[in-house]
Image 1 (cartoon, rainbow, N blue to C red):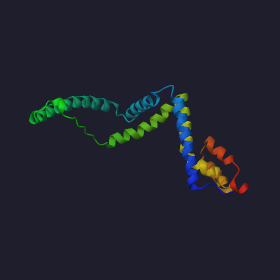
Image 2 (cartoon, one colour; image 1 turned 180 degrees about the horizontal axis):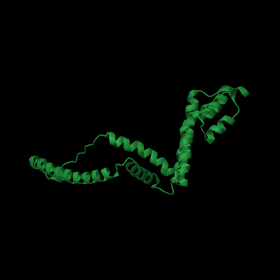
Image 3 (tube, rainbow, N blue to C red; image 1 turned 180 degrees about the vertical axis):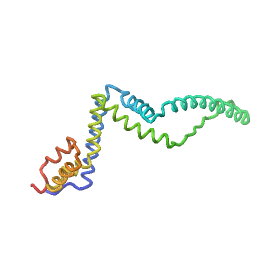
Image 4 (cartoon, rainbow, N blue to C red; image 1 turned 120 degrees about the vertical axis):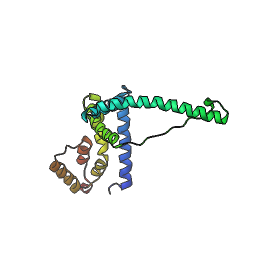
Length: 183
């Protein structure tokens, strides 16, 4: 019997990933705002750990003031356009503008990811999510290991030992599967 093709391995990786995603959804279903709360709290921790919380508070206030002014300016522009067109302002469509991320926003996003993991690790539910995410991240290796020869499996064990890494449960299970050359 020959090993799996790359296409077959990708298929199984995708299937297993979908099952993990469904399990994460199932275990967090009882707390529908779990990830939103984790994201919000992680962002706040990121701002605090970067000593940016005071700046962000001030920026938030400026943003509120700016939004008020922008709404006022938009109403005036809309009124002027409506006057020129001879229509009511409510008959005009709204438009939206988007701003680009800045270097500070990117730093906060990166730090936020670290704090999300910390927050997840603080609860039993979050620990389950982290464990499943790790399994999902390692799926490519798991699928290849499960269908690899004895020598590749042995090498994987040596590399894991050398790096001091802890294998996921699926990696352990994949290594325990009878190697192709062992048929």
